[in-house]
Image (tube, rainbow, N blue to C red):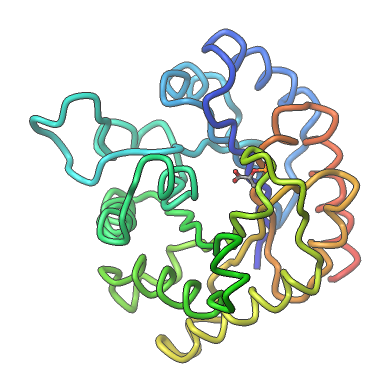
Length: 258
Ligand code: PEP
């Protein structure tokens, strides 16, 4: 299975800054077999960056979209409008769930729309701090995984990537907590088991990533977890030396594994 390094730039960088930053990354990133590097800039920058990027080195992802293709949905952008610009689409990110109040229903519609439009959805799931404290992690992960995939046909399961992102460990939320590799291993195992129980062997082909305060200093500890197929990175993806180091670490860990 491929290793995925995905940078979520969130609401950072103007179009010009995004373009300069991508230019810097492209100069340093070399295509490597089995390694997929993706960045998700603001929707505004997608057009410019899609013309600029070398997709063998860095592919683009959307941070958000609406599930309908066209229509009276003021302020929204559809998969039909961005599908020629990106290969991936992040869905169910905790900021969408908790700041913008997206529900499991919104999320399942988006996952299905992305697949329909030929994009790979990166479905984010993860428990909040209080859910963890109350011992609800397993239930939350199960509900979010199965809820998000509810409208996905069994044969399309392998078109989905899942990212485990414990909300309490995401640095942008002011968190000072960092998930240990053991925390992550337990959650990844739970997610894989949930998929296996529902979809059988196909579950083994679904990439599962980890995200939450990943930096060059801790990237190896997460990438070395069996069953961890890559990383979703927020803050550190905005800093070129950090992001580039993480890509190099991913290459090394992958080579050592094979
Ligand atoms: C994220 O928001 O998806 C994320 C993982 O952020 P950070 O790496 O900044 O914790």
